[in-house]
Image 1 (cartoon, rainbow, N blue to C red):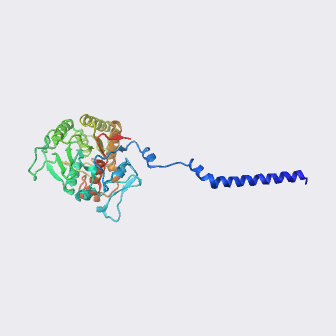
Image 2: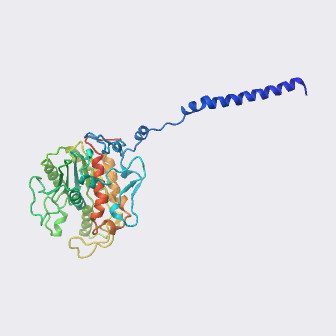
Image 3: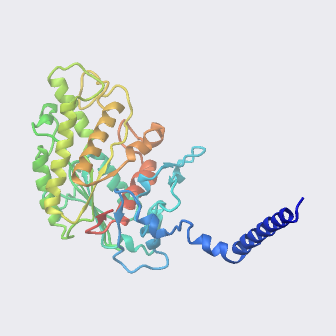
Length: 390
């Protein structure tokens, strides 16, 4: 082998060593810091900026204290919109809570009733007002909410909350309930509707119903009555018009002698959608700063149903297919008007009916304590006036 050939090989070996040593030097002395500049950086801010369009921006009005949930509120999230479930284990239902699978978006109202009774510092409840517009589920909810939180519970006439109904042994089920908590100065009130009735459908049942029966008239009376509370704009309005509308459409079908079918047709669903849009549009004219939330219909027991003296049972009045159709139509309506949507029906659909219902349709006390009451407080605590959808 020639000298020049050996020299070339040694030069190649020397050059390779230089490259290796240089690379190691870059790794130990400059590589780590340089690499970090190109690694993706994660922060709470970036996560908040990418929340879904259904979340809300929340600002706590009261001064936070060490026991406040303000740090949780700044996450601007809705735990019920996250993947989650109600934790049922070994039939211990009294301790059931909602579990969100998103660690950064956890419920803040799971133990809210005990916290209210203990008079903890909860600035997110101070000076808040909440309205329910819907059916008897709202009446059950407000009654339970008020009793368990040791709040002041009153029954009033439909047109004036200063006009009290004092005969507690015979309270009209359609009359408003008003719940006031003096310590936190929060108020909750419910207004009942007979579904989206425009034909005085219920008069055929010969039951003593309180006027007005038409839904637009009832909303008008309710809005005027709300002014007598002198609370200003409510923070949250829940819309839950479903059970009586399911029954109303079924009665109309009976009157028309239609064959009973398991689902609604497109005309019926479009009517439900359009009535919800009109309702929230009407409410917003009087309450432009308020957050509106559709309370998804839960799923009643299936099977034969008698209603107000039916001589023959109806098989599909509250069928799951009809409930699902209503919930989908309502979701579309909320999308149309930019309102929110509480998917409580989907979250409770597969829970044992014996566990959560006291009859065919109404939640029992245990379910109200662990599902419905914490749920409405969750939204109330996370909402301020003039909230913004992200």
